[in-house]
Amino acid sequence: MASKSVLTISQLTAYIKTTLEGDLKLKSVFVSGEISGCKIYPSSGHIYFSLKDDKTKINCVMYANSAALLRFAPNDGMKVLAMGRISVYAQRGEYQFCVESMQPDGVGELAVAYEQLKNRLSSEGVFDEKHKRPIPEFPRKIGVVTSSSGAVIQDIKNVVSRRCPLAEIILYPSAVQGAEAPVQLIRGLKYFNSKSDIDVIIIGRGGGSLEELNCFNDENLVWTIYDSHIPIISAVGHETDFTLCDFVSDLRVPTPSAAAELAVPDKSTMIKNIEQILDKMYCTINEKIQTAYQDVDRLNDTIEKNCPSKYLESEIQFIDNITQKIKNSVNNKLILEQANLNILADSINARNPIYILQKGYSFTEKNGKCVSSVKSLQTGDKINIRLSDGTIECSVVSINKKEED
Image (cartoon, rainbow, N blue to C red; front, top):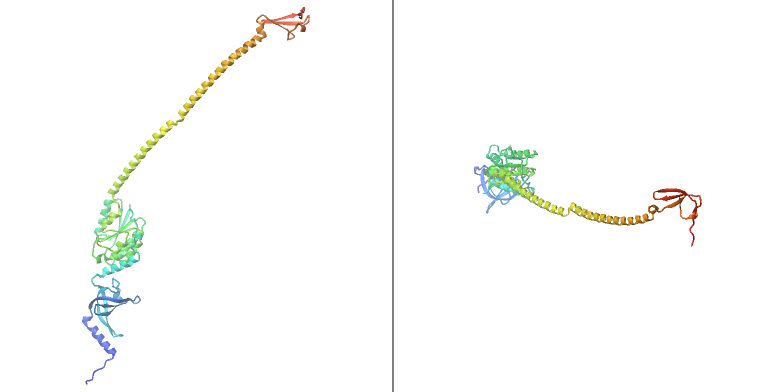
C-alpha cells in the first residue's frame, strides 16, 4: 500500500479556501434566490442571511460597507439578484457567499425602497388626512420650489398671470433630480417657512423616470413637508407618477399647471360670482325697499286712523258743544236772574221813600230821625220836611193828635 500524506483539518480547510477563493469564476458571481433567516446587526452593520431555491440554500454575508449602499431593506421571502464572491469561513469549515451588491429580482431596487419607506411612513401616520392643511382661497404670495431653467416655473407663471394677476410668484431655484436635489428642495421649503407673508408653496418638476423623480422620495424631504406650517401643493411628474411628496403634501396635483390652477382662483369665475352676488344683493335690497314702502303705507294708514289731530278735532268739537251749552245755560240763567232782579227792583222801588215822595208824599225828620208819630213832637221843635225835590225846615206851631176810636 503506497504511503499517502495526512493533512490536518486546518490544512485541508486552508487548501479548500485557497482553491475556492482563487477560482476566478467564483470571484464575481451573480446568484438569484429567496432571502431566508435575514438578520441585521446594527452594532456592526453586517447582514447575515441565506439564499435558497426549491432544492438548496447557501449562507450569505453582506458586510457593512456594502450594506450601506442598499436602497432597500432585505426581508425574508424577498427574491433578489445578488452579486458577490465565494469565500470560506475557516473556523467552521463552511463556504459562504459574500454579497457585494443586491437588488430585488424582477422589481427595481428603487421601487422596493420606495414601497418600504412609503409603508413605514404610512404606519407612522405621516400621510394621514388629519395633518392636511387647507389651501388658502385667495393667496397673495406663492412660493415655488423648482428648477429655474425648466418649463415648470414658466407654466406656473403663465397660469397664475391668466387666472389671478394680483398673485405674486416667488421662485426658490433648486435641482429637481440627482444627489443634491433633496438638500436644495429642503432648503427651499425651510426658506419659505421662515417668511411670514407666503400663503402657499408649490414644489415640483416635470415628468421623468423613477430614478429622476427619486429625490422627491427622500425621507428628510418628506418630514420637512410634514413639519411645514405653510400649505404645500405637490406637482411632481405626470398624472401616473406618484412620489412620497405627493402623499405627505396638503394637496397632490398631476402637473405643475394644475397646481397653479388650484393655487389661485380664476378671475373670470370670481367676476361672475361677484356679479351673481351683486344681483342677489340688488334683488334683496329692492325687496327690502318694497317691503319698507309697504310698511310705511301701513303706518300712514294707522297714523291717519289714530291721528291725534283728528282726536283733538273731535274733542275740540265736543268742547265747543259743551261750551255752547254752558253759554246757553248761563245766558238763560242770566235772563231769568235779570227778570227776577227787575221784579225785585220794582219791589224795592215800590218801597223806596224817594219813589213815594215823587208821587207827592213827604216825610218828616227830627234830629235826623224819621218822625212817625205826633207823639214824638212838641210845639217849637225844629223839624225838616223832605220832599222829592228838596227839604223844608219848619217849627212846630201846634200838634193835632188823631182821635182814637
